[in-house]
Image (cartoon, rainbow, N blue to C red; front, side, top):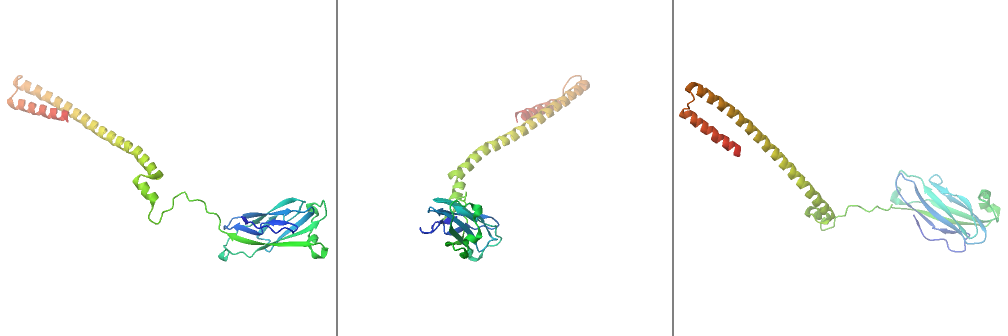
Length: 243
């Protein structure tokens, strides 16, 4: 979030970084931090100012860095509704530091300590603000090369991870489709067989009735025509049963 570049040794506070870098995104709060290092044996009081106090929140904006210790300061930029022209930012921050009495607490730090009229030696460090593009997440879909789309060709040919998944899915679906088609065909043949059996039974009943009628009329004898009809019906029934 911030580029390295601490202030050279010799200052009251070593500040890292000296440029605040915000990965700019619309309608989103963005934070970056800086570290104040006290390399001396004195208590150092500090105060952070900005040219755009309504735009940024600084925590803490005042404090005390103990001898041979550090203090982290978090700067938060409020959510912005517009993109600045050319992603340029003219905002500035100013870190003021002064040697404070030994054992001083944060609540004892006052604004008068950082005024020239106080007679204190005040050191000031200016920090620039830079907007950078946010990091892009890695794309889960392989990009196409200039010579074509290898991933798409692999999928169509059944090669590669995507093609292997497609091939496995197809191998699982094809037997199911064939099973459904076979089941439908068996069901249709069963219905046709049942219909043929019913028709055969009906014809047999009609044939028995004809036989009884002929027996009554001719004393049990069959004419040649009746014999032929019976033979034809038998042939027809045999053909139906085989099919």
